[in-house]
Image (cartoon, rainbow, N blue to C red; front, side):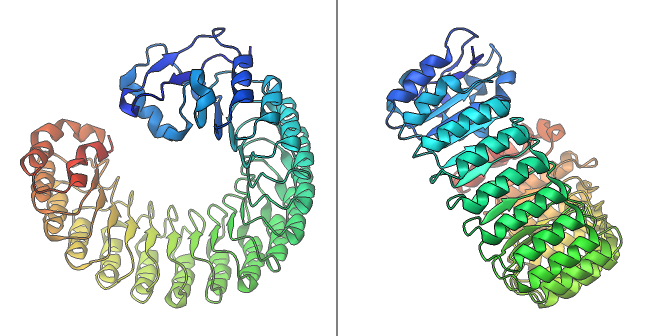
Length: 519
């Protein structure tokens, strides 16, 4: 009881030769795990996965191991039978509701520092048990409780423990339906706790009231540096309360407010805070319906602020070009932002024209995401003129922008002149073999691009693949090319031949091209 399935991987073999066993319900009970943990003196991580367990299949073989190693870092993998002498534990549960059998073990264990309970649905009862562990345990520093339905009552139990605990510095409450009531309890804990520095409260429906109490806590808390409040519908009132706190708080450096219905009114309050705050370096304001009015308020802050270096504005300042015009004016003078996400704003060619004028002057932005902005060839022409002279951008995302062969020709011209761009995402556009040929020709002599995305091209055929293959004979820097599944049948006939023929002089990273292809 408590354990339906777990994956057992021998630590005596290398990853690609790992032994994968599927142990059916009843073959191992939770007491054996508890016993091992009680005796263990070296394990530092334990991972309970209630989601992946549902996908366990008795037909899994060593050939499927790569997928598991991509999902979970190697350090989490361990044979249960040798838990006493290894440093981490990875256990997969398809149904795990009770922590009680493990409570004593974790209360006395002196080495476990990381606990992950991913979608195990422990509920408020499990949260109460976990709280009892945290009140006495002296080593646990990080806890991931994503998707456990602990609710406001569970949050209350854990809040009580956090008032006493002195070791946990990272805790993830993502998707636990704690509501405003749970936020009130956690806010009370954060007023007393002096160790938690990273807290994730995303997707908990805390609303304006919950945001208000958390804002009050952050006025006195001196340790929280990262807080995620995305998907919580805090509205303009919640934004106002947080803004009043951020005017005085000097410890929060990362704040995520994505998808909170903040609107231009809430942005006006946050803008006032950003003009005074000198600690926030990363802020996500995406999906908040700021519109052009909110963009104007934000722009006024970015002209003054000297600490924000990364900003997320996805799907929030469009769909017209006015919001981009305000933002572009700020980017002409701002000297601290190096990463900006402007995806899904549908600003069109006119909006991109405004941005392009800013990029000709801006000298700090190195990463810019412009996915799904309806740029088209007209917008690419305007953007290309700035990219030919810009000397700071290294990563640019242009996926899903209705770019056709004329746009590809303009970007090929950029690749011939620009010597700073190392990654360009052109996925999901309308480029045909003709445009791919132009890009491939430019890439033959380009020596800075190491990654390019070319997936989901409806007009991309064998001629385009041959052009890419020929390009790889000359290019010495590309390590990753993303291609669509439907292009897979060309690999053996063209690209694979190029790699095999030139194996002796192509870099090892290029030789691994096939493994890097997105299929």
